[in-house]
Amino acid sequence: MKSGAEYLKSCGVRPSLQRLAIYKYVAEHPTHPTADEIYEALKDQIPTLSKTTVYNTMKLFVGSGVIDEVFIDRTSERFDANTHLHAHFMCEECGAIYDSAVENTEIIAASVPEGAELRRTQLLYYGTCVNCLKTK
Image (cartoon, rainbow, N blue to C red; front, side):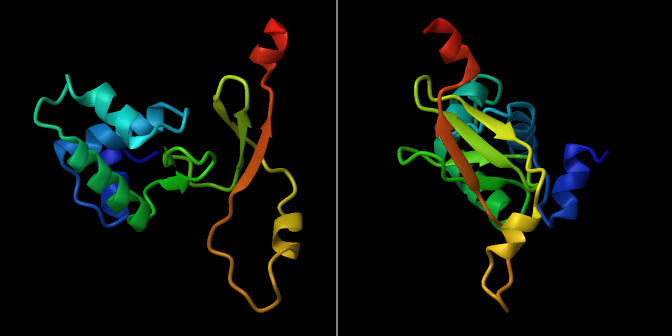
């Protein structure tokens, strides 16, 4: 498995202290954090970090294929270091977002218009998570 620096380089991104910390945070937190959440988590660790740097880094990462941008709710952009095909489930009670495996990829391919090229897809599910169901 590649290190964070090797992975960024393989995507054409020059690794810096801030970029490595931001990538590491997203990779280690499969909660699909927002740029604001990333900034809040790292600002004490990296005093020179600004929100602008986080937003610009996320834009660079998305454009370079380092991470994916997830549009699962209308209130914020969220980010996911898992760039492999998978679905997302958002709990409408607590707002938690979970990754979900996609077992049958044939249905996705069958949905693409003939002659079109699929670059990325997002499968979104909404409902109530197990934890919220337990508390009801």
